[in-house]
Length: 258
Length: 248
Image 1: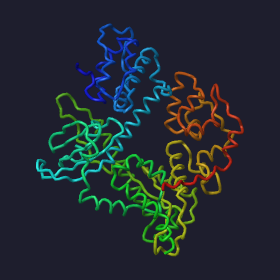
Image 2: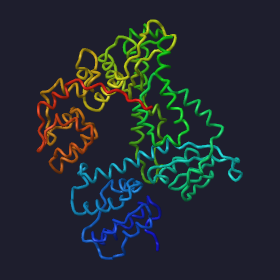
Image 3: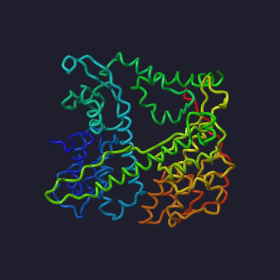
Image 4: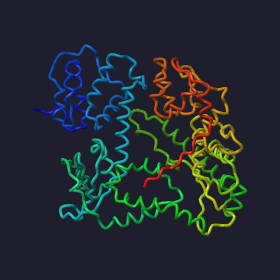
């Protein structure tokens, strides 16, 4: 059977199916219950009815943008939520303007979590150099990262622009990206065992990180907000934080007394 | 440094007048560059002609900014904010940054041995935002003798000092009045304004705005919400100083 969604964040695929889903009526939504992380199971939602929907569907301005971001969320019910909200938008004129509607806020919140994950992934991917005869220059930069949402496609343009000349790969449990300097390709899931080992540049980076830490401006809450603890496992510099924070008061005191 | 005298005393090679003269010169050039760009954009190509006039070269697209060290001299918060306000309105600065003074080894004996509290820096940033986005004037933000309260944020302190202006009606109050309610940010106010065009707002809508908006409840009236006078009095008690938890 042809799957209606090509990947977990396939908003275009979902938007293309939307008229048919709306036409099927709410009875068809019963299949939602069975939604899982597996794309195959989501196919259950897509019935093949040809009956025309009684209510017209004209997406309001901004719907496309919101939906595209929500579709990247890891929440298994994301498409069901979007579909239910479209049904309400059809029935309730003025609903889109009511930005305080609870379900609207819920969707906005999912979209914001996705935006944040994209932002953090831009910042927290740490490449390590790996020898590779096939790559141009004989080496490749490989990173292991665990994104909380399906943001791999959304972050790809940033890394292509940023490291256009270097062959690189980003491995994640949700799929991988490979850039050979010319072409971007995607492959299936990777596991932590595929993560590259520490390279020669890492000591330099750790020295730099240690040196820019200012013990007189220790703000733990802010630090944890900017670099949430769940990213620490894949950040080599995170191992330094404990020591830097522990020694900060002593170092600061020394600065004042001398 | 927030004042010309302390700049002279502690950084004698810098000159406050000279700095402001340079800022004005850059401000004028920024304005000229903006006007040139507007003119170039206004040129519309006729059919068959080249697409459009060449764009003038960009000049400092990020604008100007500056940084003030607070706590190294005796200047109070009122003086700091008046200087920022002058820089924002007079010199068109994009940002003024505040940095709490912290001592370094072998510092001059004229510098204080104590670091300025980071909270003071935080309060100055909050006041800076109130000036730039919330319609507050530099002179009205500082309600205590010269310094911002370290216990209450500047907006709450202002609201407690002006009880006559509250509570405000979420369904009718103008944007300017809602912006002065502690706990409501620009984003929350815009959401309330957008939603109230379609329906009356309820207490649940205010709570739904998020945890910060809960602090706004004592200052707001809605069809199913009326604050008690004691709610505001409870806020006036100096809040328990939050202690930074340790991570390890």
